[in-house]
Image 1 (cartoon, rainbow, N blue to C red):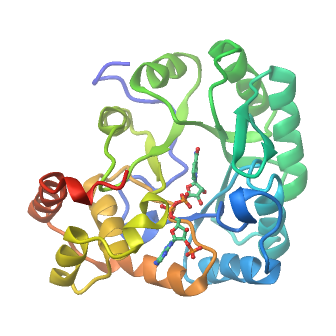
Image 2: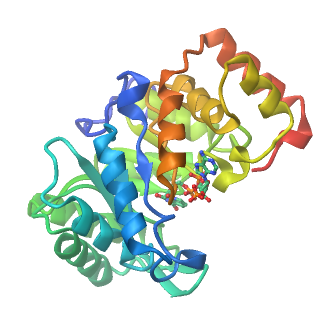
Length: 295
Ligand SMILES: NC(=O)c1ccc[n+]([C@@H]2O[C@H](COP(=O)([O-])OP(=O)(O)OC[C@H]3O[C@@H](n4cnc5c(N)ncnc54)[C@H](OP(=O)(O)O)[C@@H]3O)[C@@H](O)[C@H]2O)c1
């Protein structure tokens, strides 16, 4: 894909819209330790989902692997019938062997089953946004994307996304399918996928940073980020999210939390105004301070 080429996927995530429309909710924390099985308090998990939608969140990120199946089941239980305009993005192609254990499986017949079972668990006829959770190196990318493309043609998937991919994989995939979203790890202290972000900007692909709070470490006392946050009358988590929202118009952060207080704290990030100069200055302040890097 060249800089001039435009991705043909009509956007399902609100590219270019104000921060309050672009901040979403990640559901991986609504599971037990190691993202395995149920959390201690399932009712509390479902209340966080309801609170997110009540607070205006219109994009919920999940995956069959969270639990596995737990997060998808809670989403249906808490939110079905779904509010108009709510985008539920799910993923398949990552298997579970126990707490904290994940392994890719991209065999087409398995991916087809993943999609069918997510449709059933979420109780929808079509999945808004379906990510290949990992490209399985043991199966050709063409075969993995072909089955998702077939299911898109069958009306079972609306948009297709990729997760944990590099620039060459996004380019290759874009020759086969319309890539609507890329979900990679990215936060203020971990900008390894800067080139992928740039490609998404050029191609009009939503960039969905996972671990936007560095899996919670940016919400803990953090030195330089704490000092910067006080300048904006914000918490470190809020500044870390506001920075992402202002970093790029294609950025759709999905902070994850199991706690409604944290959810509401995180959503306030969308109200923090940062200029382009602020974004550059905050990024440089973090870069100049190696101790700030929590990856
Ligand atoms: N595509 C992929 O391979 C992939 C991989 C990982 C994650 N994801 C997606 O990305 C989402 C976000 O990533 P993540 O959940 O791993 O990491 P994250 O959003 O960076 O951080 C989540 C952690 O931060 C804590 N937290 C959140 N807000 C807080 C606040 N205001 N104050 C204090 N602590 C706070 C949460 O604990 P509490 O529960 O106590 O709030 C949780 O432990 C996931 O939920 C999932 O949907 C995708």
